[in-house]
Image (tube, rainbow, N blue to C red):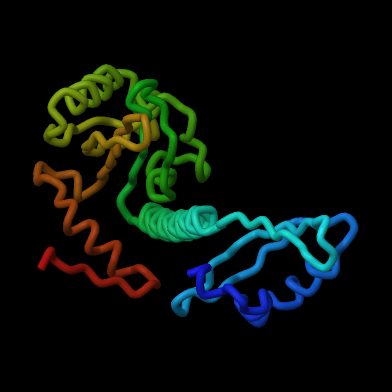
Length: 235
């Protein structure tokens, strides 16, 4: 490509935007500095960084150039990576918002329990109301402390069984508050490097021997969502 530049003015080999830089380099006799210009090659811009130096021959200069295409490609890949990370961050924030909405608006009492410590990390308003405490008060407490003293060992045994088999039938237990009867079911899930239990508490007429249908519960929550929501199958 450079062979085609022989006998051409240097300024004619670069883009219009780069021409003032060529003039500046040709006129700089003292304290020269590197300047990036873009050559037009086969319809594409090729970035080159030049430094001009004087010679012993009057009116002649030497321009030393560095090809910046590799650096430009790396910079472009970095930009694409940053954009992808930003999109992923936005997607995660949207997923978290959706999860928070479902969790807080669910009429079913739900607790999230750390599988290692057995301490509650999250509770939704329905769980707080059923337990009879202020909103968020169960967070940090041991899950067994919410239940009647006679049933605490059974709660621990339930979580241990779920951790081992992941599928356990709901268990009839009594809460500390007025010895309320409820059925307790739990599911193990992993998030990041930790493991947690999703604990559901069902009281009243719903606390029958019939198993809880999570699909029905989810459908009820989605029906009350203020946001538009569509569920599809894999096809």
